[in-house]
Image (cartoon, rainbow, N blue to C red):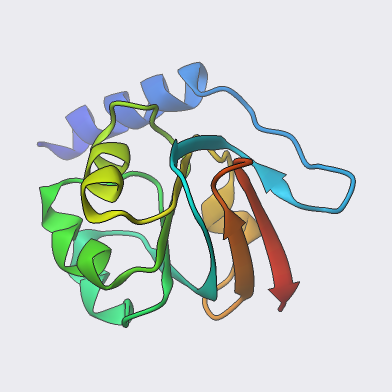
Length: 132
């Protein structure tokens, strides 16, 4: 994919991604793509080249995933993406691996920082920061 094609895709996704709200508790809400509840440290991945950042039990946070993210996904206790729906890559892989996953959580890459301790309650589609 060229840089121009990537920018066009990004612009399309930005324009067509539903904005998720914050709950009363400050929790961020997205869409449950794979059920379960888990806590762990966030690891923000801007590209699959950062797969090594995700250690066993971490929460993988990315804009979206592709097959290149599989090494990180295998280590993750939970997955959170800014885009996607029930049939996106992250959702399908998370269900196959039995990993709690929330997709469509707008601004996840900026609302969370590397190393935040979070609770991912995918049953409710909610991610809550436990400790910054």
